[in-house]
Image (cartoon, rainbow, N blue to C red; front, side, top):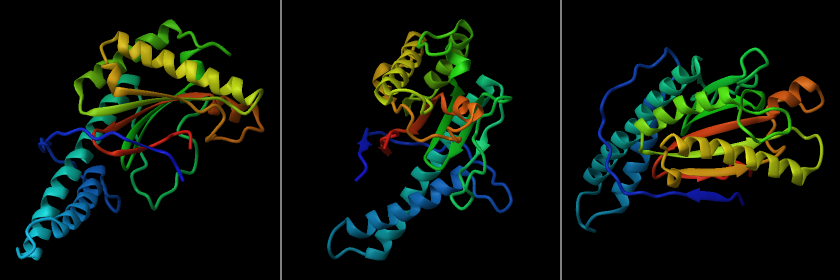
Length: 243
């Protein structure tokens, strides 16, 4: 059974805008609203007085769920656009669960990527963008990138942040896990130095787990050495990224 991280925070959501959808591809807002409507409808059916109108409760619950789900989708859409602007890329849309990604989000030519997924936004950075080889000391240019990222994260406080380090499969497993954790911790510390509330940030070192490219080539190993910043809306159940 996979471990999960449950972060439940009370709060209310207000819809502040709407998102457009691409043809034949549901937007994150639309997907969030649909999921929210289903969950809200179930909640409405099983709550409330025993003799009250069950159908009415389903409709009310579905409407509330759609509102919350749509708001989460809008929030993540805006977060993806802002983070992509911070690092000078266009966001990759992986929100359609029926379409499997055909290639890693980063490459030698494009070492940084922002990926939109159904429940989160993911900023992926090759280790060479942030660190020298086998080091966990941030480069000066990396600190400037993280300063911009921190500004965006500070403007969107209703999110939870995971910083996750990865390595390739070369060398000792335990050493790789520790190195990946130290790198993730270094990124977290830089975000905190730039004003991000440390209680919003969780750090993980996953070592060689979950490679995004084959480890049997130098090019593939270079892509697997990376740090990811995952941005989730508050109140969702977050899976352990190392599982």
